[in-house]
Length: 140
Figure (cartoon, rainbow, N blue to C red):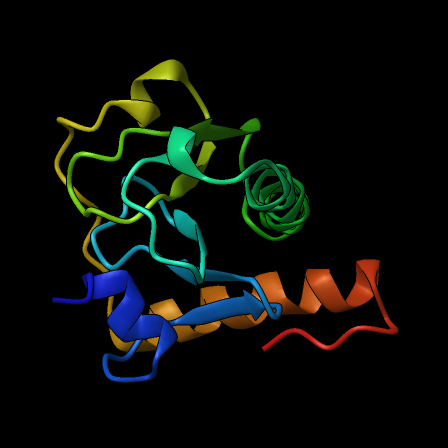
């Protein structure tokens, strides 16, 4: 059975999409640690990050860096943290999380509850920063 992330890639499940390329997708985490918490995935369904082929692995991190830069520009934070846990969904992914302190990256913290309008506004703000950084590319 396809992972929940593969179902998002295929358009079978909704997501607040941030950006998409032929090989990668970034979308807001619907159970965020902080406002702007984004998931970056390869479209290819591979369970464990370390099992990705080298080109996909490197490309995923480069894509995550671009998303992280846009998040840092769009969301008030001290830093953007990157975390790979991989236990919750059997599909390789990177958490890109705007943080103000180390405590913000604790996955045991209560999750931030947001309205659909707040998710949409965050996605639009991050997309705008991506467009500013790469005016020749269009964010999804």
